[in-house]
Picture 1 (tube, protein in one colour):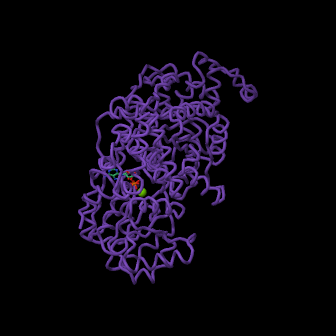
Picture 2 (cartoon, helix red, strand yellow; picture 1 turned 60 degrees about the horizontal axis):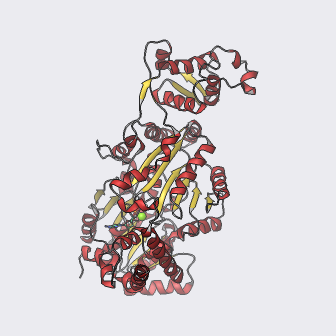
Length: 606
Ligand code: ADP
Ligand code: MG
């Protein structure tokens, strides 16, 4: 029998385990329960797939998204693993076949949704199931950010399958959720495995106070650096997903919206097209992306501030699963805070959600390394600077902003604290809008005192003032701004205010991942500098596309971008050389290895 490491090499084509993977696998093989916490893209699947290959019988994987089971099954089949999914789209024949193969123990991995599981329990009890792997296990908890009632029924598993080991996997690590998962599943002699949440190949960037048009411009510039690559833009509202997708399409980009207002068929079509590289950009509400194992998502953009660090981290985690440098950008402005606060106030768990939003805002406002904040949030102490976030790349410069703050506060005071964010900025700038004139605000002493500062900078300063606690928003009074006691201290000259100089647009033109790629991910630099290597990459992509189409698989199931990049940097002379290439397992070498070797040889001849 092969060891886990041998399986890793021969079946998956990887050389070494990532931290924790081997311990987790050994623990499961010794038939003990486990809770596995690993960031999105961290490599959870292998932790149950390898034990499934070691065990006799059929391992059952509970996964929430039926539409994605096909891709997971395809990926396993492409690596020569007998896997299948039980779902409503199967024909009776297919289901019969699955049951027969499970009974004989030929099927190694069976995917099933939690709602479907209930119906299938009677016959499942008659076959040999060594392991239940519950993916996205946070869905069982109301404390998590994606509660699904169907998941609560999984509490009966130990009772109904006393011999089976149970393993719960999730990328959501907050304490309450963690305890709830263990409790609800009734895990026995379990161990909790927590991997580092660091994903160093993801660059982190925050852009503050951009208008809609400015965001679109910045997004276009990011997309232009990743031509032909895949990316996701997350928006808060359905309307925005459609608006952004439309704007991008107008510029000739293959973009689509994805949101809960669309029919299931429409949504599945978008998801399929994205997985199959038929569209490049999906503009989605948060409902998109869970369970998508597409390894070549090169950028994730947040058009709005997300509601919590958990959601944010899970969403950006969908970029760069293959380990290659990938870019993440978060836009946030004042309107986001208002919208999200209103959501929070209407939500069932107001206090928890409010705390979560506070922490998210702190991240966005941070003046220290952003990765440090994220890692600390997930309970990892980190005190270094990552060198791959906007703060590390360009530390904010501070200045004495007392006078600016006083001007803003005095504008707020002179309007009896009856104005909101935008109007405050407009009054300072000296904008005579209809509303301002009607209210006589163009007559107050502070009207236009900040004319020398751009509107955008005023937005930025006001956001900083909010974060510094000089002002607060009265959500129950039309979102008007109120001056706090510490704001008064600055206004009356008792305290000094330090502000950060707003980052100028120009500096954004310097590509974030580029800085990093030069140091650490050098194989990536040719994305911006097309050269011979890139030609070969495109040739290989074409071969991959053909194989994908012949098998009706997504392209990334054939091979990841990282594998193609390795082929480019160490061109194989013979099929044997493929054994040394990342992600080329034995089955893949047998199925289509020769076609890649031929393509490389052909290219080199030319
Ligand atoms: P998760 O489910 O935790 O979000 P996945 O299981 O989908 O992450 O893994 C993310 C990517 O990392 C996949 O492309 C997977 O093949 C790859 N991967 C996992 N473990 C390893 C490893 N030990 N070496 C190389 N690549 C790995
Ligand atoms: Mg996963």
